[in-house]
Image (cartoon, rainbow, N blue to C red; front, side):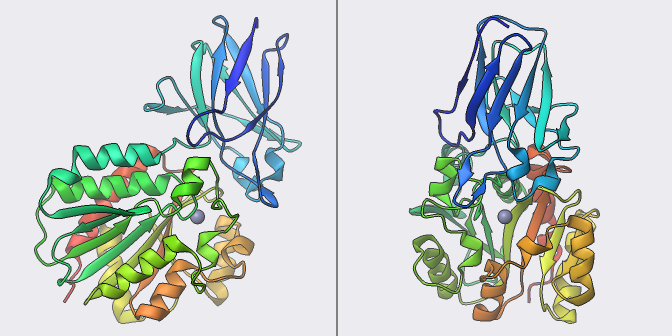
Length: 356
Ligand SMILES: [Zn+2]
């Protein structure tokens, strides 16, 4: 390999160059530090001086991620244009290093843990579709906010990207909005959405935290975070909020799942079957007792799920007395296009629910 450079100087980029070994065509990168831990996501651009048959990319400190079990069998993404992303065929996680080969790379390409979804992409999507429609209202209170329909009717609240690296949440919400725009009008249901809650962390290329090193999904009982206060105030104004959904991405799990706590049986019977009908592979997991151990064995991140602090869905459920859950989209199982499709299917499920 004659020469190569790595570019981390664009919105959402993440990682640090360690070294380039020209003789064996290896690029070594570290995950960026994020407070006392490391980002699980990485995103950067590779520029080669001349075409190569193959190069190897090594994430040297991958084992330092809190979600390191997620590296086994994980297939990262590459893109030539930053918009169209393809999974690589395989990878290896050994001795704390995560590595993968790129065969016949072009001289310039992007590498990502998961396809990025920037604040600019959201702006462009909203301008091209949602903003032209009468049923929608789009505004900013530091974070982008979207309303659909008559808010005097029952309202579903959806938020995404509390954790900025979990871009699948934004693809999911985009798919849901597309279905809202193109599907049948719903006179009896309204929506309040916040597709990118941690907007500063998203711009900075963080994985979990905001610029003050706060994990948004652990501080809902506090009142000092502007972004979360915006959401609470908007929910507070709703006459008939009916359901709160917080969309996340899961680094380790091989399945998509809905995580809930203390939703009574009648409400579960009302809400879950229509969703399950449209998304048959999704699991519903209750946060308690036996299921807790089941969750651990299944997704192996119990410590993180149960880490101290107030989660969004727990807070909203008790404060506003409405059912609330977290939707976790598996980074392994569900790529960006599938996340978008899932959002559309999810909306079809919501349409089938009897909201009276
Ligand atoms: Zn998350």
